[in-house]
Image (cartoon, rainbow, N blue to C red; front, side, top):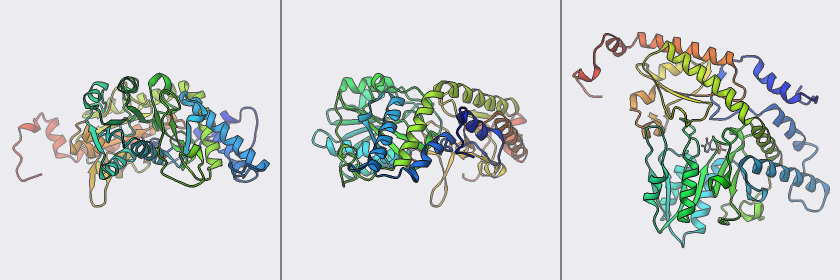
Length: 425
Ligand SMILES: *Cc1c(COP(=O)(O)O)cnc(C)c1O
């Protein structure tokens, strides 16, 4: 039962989640995470007994709900070194990213119309930037290096008098690469330009301090850190400088006018608890997950040649492993490992399989991109699961390579580049 309460309930619950291997093995923690049982337990009463509207000022129901929201606000602020008043609740990081970009653009349109971002942002940033371009804003999409990083120097070259905002993803959701956020924050401070970061994948996994890093706006999502779906937050700096945003949603003036709408109290309570747990276990979990991730990668490398790591070897999220399996047909590989829940380097667009734009941006060729798999390990990943996944991926890749004439040629020592190909690709 989830609602039992004994002193070790937390460990019991997490232990319970990790106890028994279940198929398909879940290794897609960048897409979403399971709600931590302790988070769920904390949320539960707010659906039923404690159902008040946090903006009801006249009675106990409202006050209790408001107090719970304020506690969550403090828990989330503590995770990133902010103060409570700097946290604006949203419906998720897609909304937070929209509010950061559109809200800043609208507010500062008299000052300038230029925004700098990167080619490897989440779609919530890229699509919002494309929208802003239709409204007269100019956006620079910076290329990244072979590991998926931008540098402060690159950004410095692009900042000019009309630049109002820089937005750089903290840790990439596909390849796990971590950007030099502190250096970029420092640069933006020197230049007097606002700095936003999408920290959805970094939060709870990397020690974030918005003060030390010079971050003005930061997006978070509960469901990427063992909280519920449909709730997120935007950190909005209150001093040095005080950041002001134009709201996108109007009606009632909630969240200090930046985001109207009745607050999702159970979701926010869960988000707060998730942030508190994440802060508490950050170091130990980071270490535990890294060991598992390294174990997976070592096993794969010891049994398969022609496998390539995408992203940075060390400046990377500990739960991320993104690998290209050369000479393996990507779709067949995914079909062959249906007992493992992972993401591939291909995105299904309306008509075709497109290689991931992130992999393309770091120079991974189209063929190799289609053979790429993102393994996302998390809080509930076990060693047993890692060993199972390694075994299944290795045997499937070997089987497919056995069927690959190209792989046979390479093994016979033929240099593929020397072959005169006929026909077209
Ligand atoms: C998941 C994700 C988002 C979107 O968050 P939602 O809360 O699902 O809207 C934005 N940015 C990154 C990097 C993500 O991984």
